[in-house]
Image (cartoon, rainbow, N blue to C red; front, side):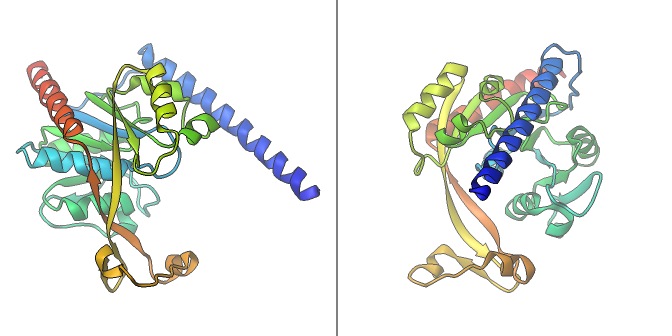
Length: 287
C-alpha cells in the first residue's frame, strides 16, 4: 500500500515539474514569436530537424537522410548538432569533411553516427548552434546547414522547420518537450516508425487540428551493430540467439547503432527537395 502511495506521489510530482517546464517553454516561445527575443540568422539556408516528444523518435536518422539527399545533389552542406552527453564543452569540429572524425566520447553518439556515415560532410557540435554555424561558415562555407534536434533551439532562425511526432499515446499522455499544439511552427510533420505505430488515424487527425503542414511517415530499419572489436550486420545475426546485457554493454562493450537506413516515400523526398530548392533560391536572393 505504501509503495503504491509513494509511486502516486512520484507521478504527481513529475507531472507538476512537467507543467512548470511547459509553462516556461510557452513563455519562451511567446517571446520568440513576438520577436521580443531576436533569432540569429546564419548566411546559409537552415533546415531544422527536431521532435516534440522525449526519447528517440528518429531525429538523427532523418537528419542523416536529408543531409545525404542534399549532398548527392551537389549542395554544399554542414551538419550542426549539440553533442548530447559528450565530454567536451564549447564548439568542437566533430568531422572536417575530409575523413578526420573525433572519438564518440568527445563529440557524442549522434554526431559520431552522422560523421561516420557522411565522411565528406563537416559536422560541428555546439550547445549554441549559432556559434557553431559561425565557425562552420568561416571554415567550410556551406550553402545549407542541417540542424539535428533543433525544434526547441529557437535561438537560430531556420528556413525549413521539420518536426517528428511519435506515437499517439505519447501525444495524449502529456510527456512532451512542449505542448503538442506547437507543431504549428513546423513546415513538415513526419510520423516516426509508421510501420509499428498504433492509432495512426487518430494521430494524423490530431496533427491536422494543429497545423495545415504536409504530413508524412517513415520507418527505421537497423542495418548493423558495432562493438569495439567487430561490426555485425543484421543479416549476420539472422537465426542466431542474441543476448545484450545493458549494464555490461555500458561498462565493458559499448554497443552503438552504427548505421540506420531511413525509408521515405518518393513524395516525401520530392517535397523536401522542392521546398529546399525553392527556399534556398529565396535565401540566396535575400543574401
